[in-house]
Image (cartoon, helix red, strand yellow):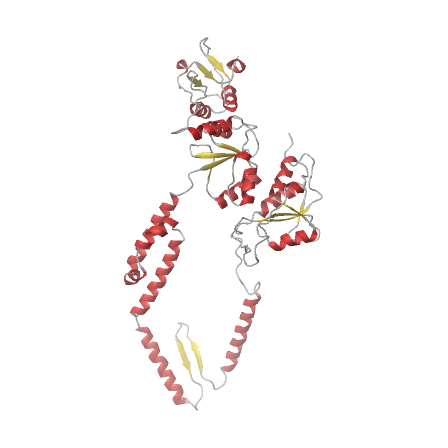
Length: 455
């Protein structure tokens, strides 16, 4: 079977695209992922909006880009157009997936400014790559040269010794008395500086600075609940100044407690991906991190509410999601949620045509009073699953139990034997293929055992 996007070769070979895809708040740039998908389909991607551009993939981009595209008559499309072209393997009509501009009717003062929060490579400033710094160095070198030429004249000079102390060097004879007085004054200042200890006001200022820095650092890790409840009863500014060490310890303890509390407030719902290509996988991760509300999990478990399928294939994750009454959704749900800036209704994107049991089990889960457990295999006799079964024995057993069945570890206690049997068969036991379990869950009915008997 041909991969998506390969049915007609480079399906977008005549397209020159400019991509501008941002998050709704203008802090995350998602353009790179869609640029790569366009290149894979044969399109040329321009880094700038030039005259050769024929298509603009736009979402929450700059208003100037939108107006420029409309003025030139360039086709404005959404990210859904890119994905549909890739899945269908043909050039989809652009009018089916037009781009939307949420800032089109806003006054200019209210239009969003975009500042990407993704980290950039750090390049240290040097005179070679910074003209401003180069001019400063040239100015300092010029002033130093002037100072060296002045040393030969009868002008008093202030200089620093190797240990950092200031030295006064008079050279003229006309103002010898004034020079001597200045030298004496500098010597007095030097002696006083050596024996000077910090005053209480200096200690308070230093303590205030440390306190503010620690409070700022701690606030970055405090949750909203902690800020509302903990800061009011926490140490005030004056108490920290009076006892800076105790205040710092209290702030550090508050920061540790807030960190533990923050870790406990992660989303309770988990989302699992299956049959997901790598380029779509990265898009889902970015959207989940931006819209929040979900934690990503590797396997379907008790907290899983959504299973996202890149392709409508019957995988273990899909079957476990059906057995647990989860949403089984297509990738387009994530793209449309990205377009809207929030998680949208799941029903239009449920893969019920491919997995008709999914909405039925989901409704049963919603109507169940306590912890949901299916009844598909509730009336079936005890089963034994072969260690050589495929899928693995543990996963098949989990599916049977989730659907109300009973599994034993002792073969002689079972009336149904699932998977290959190496030993002698009994007439009172049914020996069925693993597909009997999988097909029954997919169709939400117990399939006829005659169609799944093992020889």
